[in-house]
Image (cartoon, rainbow, N blue to C red; front, side, top):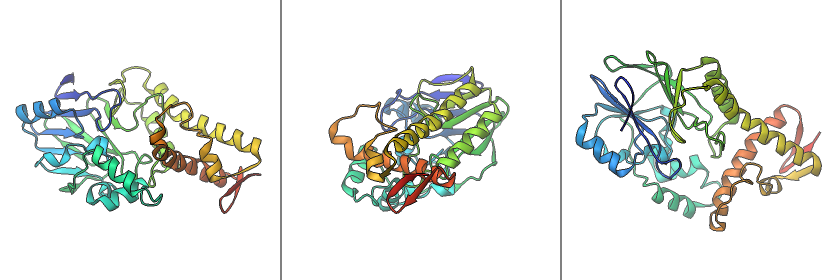
Length: 296
């Protein structure tokens, strides 16, 4: 358990290892845990040493809600995130497994992530402030990754927990059926203007204490680099079908992964490519004719 400041402690997860993330523990007059996907030894430490009053979930992905069914304390989440926790069917539809006819793959993914049904006990709303004692924690709705993805801002410390706005070199992830690229860009632009003093993301190397604005800009600009590459490839081709565009692996080309995982990464690539293509159509840069995308 790593002390950040005052009553705020970081439960640091591995750099990247599914289904874990960095979690935060606030040991104040009211004790609050933010996200639950901690390592087994951390889970035991928390349960043995701390009385938790309630849990806040940034969003419903497995690498943030892992372990959630092991807690009896009240859990709160944005209402748009219930779909990830309600049933296997709603989870698979939100991720995109159902639409791609990959229910077996979705079932395996859920088993690896330890999915268990755990409906929230209530919902928080954007802007809501939790008074914990000497700590005031404000909900910040930061959609794009998922519709109800939220961060939590420590008002008196200037610290923002950003979950999957993780500032890693990979860049933003918007590769599910419910992700929205324009929302993601708007969320990042909002944070760039906010200029928090410190960001603690849900993945990566831990707290970002310097060059916060620059790090946010660099993270956002990965989106534009991907889009520029997709547009350049499309210009060279003149036109292409969605399946051809997905085969270019604009997002995942630089990342090697085992051949047996090809269908999983292709599905995420497709959703991310569709987000970019929809933006390019709206901006009038390309035309869409059913499944064919054509440079204007």
